[in-house]
Image 1: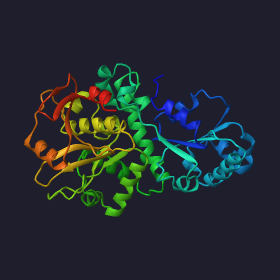
Image 2: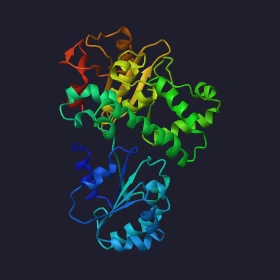
Image 3: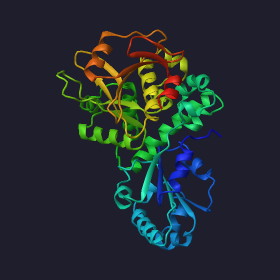
Image 4: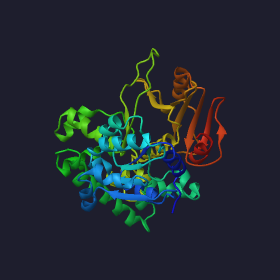
Length: 387
């Protein structure tokens, strides 16, 4: 059992908020974490993908009223959006009776934007948390685990598989279940072949500024449809869009977001890269490493910080720009080399950004200065010292 770093935060929220939503993509470990909690009050569990549990909620108010002094865990809550108004009524009733701790823990595989009814109906009564796949600092001996974590990704069944073939098969099955079953449940009418091609084409554009019109044309769909597919993948915690940095800087800036598959193991499966050796020998290697590092970094940023990328039409760029609430700006470049250099493009970009400091993330090794403001640092050390 790998201890999830979100566990203590989840326990704290459960003591403060009437309802907590633990969100994240499917198979990320939400149910395991929820059922492993040690709580003072008894727990009642419902899985809305189980017909028998779904049938119990034919009259949800009547059924749930019988568990007034328990924490009710509702798994795959996005399958029953009509449940949220009932929860609001029950929460308000119990609030008037003086109950402050959580009465409901909702597990879901869609973002608050997709769970629109929850964000509207339970406003002021619900706290949202996201559970990601395993992050590098959660793993025993992160330095030794990094290569396997990058290759296999962080989904528990993939990372903990007994061998590489089992891991690869799990990721293939995961992708198949999404394109054949789960995405159609969200209202997408495209065939599994088109959805798989869309996902694969996104994989081959990992870390690129995406031209959706061109991508849509290659698939024979219109741009609005492609945007809908992309927004849905993002809302299901599979894809991340990193917005462009934007200021009146007097330069012609690239204004498109960069798109990443959030889990490197899923990326490698979509790109047809079965082993780490295949990844290392493929043109996608650098973009895969960049996306892997960015995901590890962003998942440890405070919610008050903002992240973007910077690129001019002349070619100067910074992979990741982090702005703190106090106004401090950090420029992060990601290189898969142990001997990085400060390029004129990075120096120019930091001046335009007015960045206070810069880092070049490398795979491993002790940190060392490259200039007065730029430091080369291993990913593991960066995560330990900048989170």
